Length: 265
Ligand code: ATR
Image (cartoon, rainbow, N blue to C red):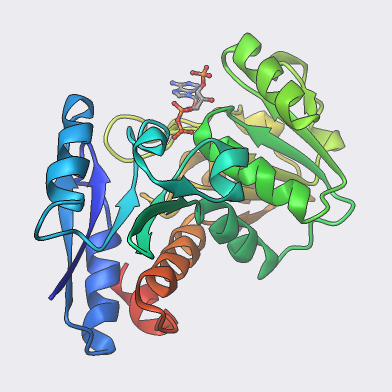
């Protein structure tokens, strides 16, 4: 039996096990998807002894706080990991432990189902690893303009410089300038940040489209505020599904069963 799992700390909130186990079951693949709750100081030991060990682990979904710190322990990473600086998927190829990032693909796929970014003015809230995956995707998809806003201004400015996009302080944002607003911080997430949005409810306009990468709950405060003002909303659930389908295809070489995976989450 092949073994896969989510590597995170904590890992309890993750819906990846339900999603991947449902897909393995549906395609009659002899594999199990587990939860590997590994604290930062045990990451190296886990990779050496478990992942590369005798009963090797065949693939990992990687989440907070390991997405960046895992990179030096892999044998090779692709362009997406290098550009984003974060790895969310680990797999074996030719006996090499490889890293890729399916978050940018998942974001791009989930968004493009209903929205075309070409020529649009986009505001991205946050400047962490998730924001890097989002901006990487938006640049590849020919977004019109991209503006970053972030709690810590210095970090936001550096991020904007890295990607050659703009930075704007939160207090100076002009809502009318943006078509699409993407939320990439943990604000709004179940377990501490519920009912909090990084933007005031007065920000929203009818012509806005709001995308939140947080998917628990499905409608965050950010999305509720946008919807309340008559805007269009896109839940992060689709991004989670799309990045997971891509992971499944990398690990198994099989087409991911979309309906089964969607229903499982
Ligand atoms: P990830 O890799 O998941 O994106 P990260 O690199 O820690 O995580 O980045 C988290 C982002 O959420 C950052 O933009 C962070 O803002 P700061 O740069 O000011 O830290 C933002 N963030 C996290 N907690 C926040 C909070 N309570 N209020 C506002 N922004 C927050």
